[in-house]
Image 1 (cartoon, rainbow over the protein chains, first blue to last red):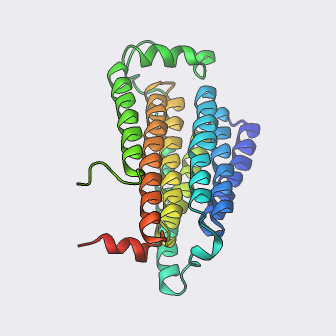
Image 2 (cartoon, rainbow over the protein chains, first blue to last red):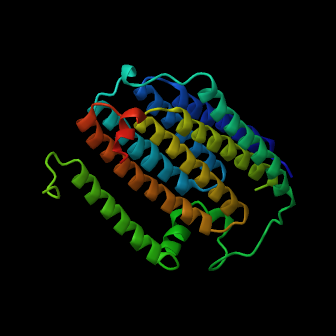
Amino acid sequence: MVSWVEILALGGLGILVLIGAALAGALRDPVYAVLSLVLTMIGVAGVYFLLGAEYMGIIQVIVYAGAILVTFLFVVMLISLTKSDISPLPRGLALWGPLGISLGWTIFLLYGLQGVKDLPLRTQVLHQEDVPHFLYGTIQPIGKALFTAYVLPFELLSFTLLVGIVGAILLVQKKPRYVR
Amino acid sequence: MSVEVLYGVLSLSACLFALGLLTLMLRRNFLLALLGLEMLINAGNLNFLAFARYHNDLTGAMFVLFGICLAAVEAVIGLALAVRFFRAHESLGFHAIASLRW
């Protein structure tokens, strides 16, 4: 059964995502490039909502659009990167080569994706009990999984974040202590 | 969730991946190439979540959660490197970064 509302919403969000990504790849002003990537991230969050994973959509908006890209913007303004620092897009073979590669890659992937229609609807569920449909996007099953089956990756990830923070502080010091 | 929606999300993710790859190849600036990397990570996350939802399984959603956190770490380290490099060389172009080779 095809739900046309879902397909239409997905099409609209997809156009939003792709326009944002294309602008981020083509605009010369770095501030505008980062801001158009925010558009992409919000579109991706919309797709998450459409898929029924609301928690992931919220995290996408808060962490990606709200934190990561704002940090990008912050750095662009901190080092005052302006339009004149950005070289324009290359011309000739340096432009058409990568364009051809990625276009061919897309066509190859879209062709290969035809096989998705033969997938069985339910393969085996990898862990624990079934998640009820109406609970999927909420934090309850996610929190339960995070503190039972995925507790080790979760803790390792928090350690990775700590290492990232320490590394960033160490990197941007004016006179690093680790240089003798 | 129907297979048509799955196909749509996977196609969108393929196109987003291609655009990210293009940004990574065409931009001659470290900071803007990092933007392309963010697009690639998002394309991967979309794939994970589409299949997780299709099979009504949480594993893919967990991967998305961890992937977002790892993208944050990657952005933090990349931006710290960018700030440090810009202080020393007054530029973030790849022609300047190529001087790091030895």
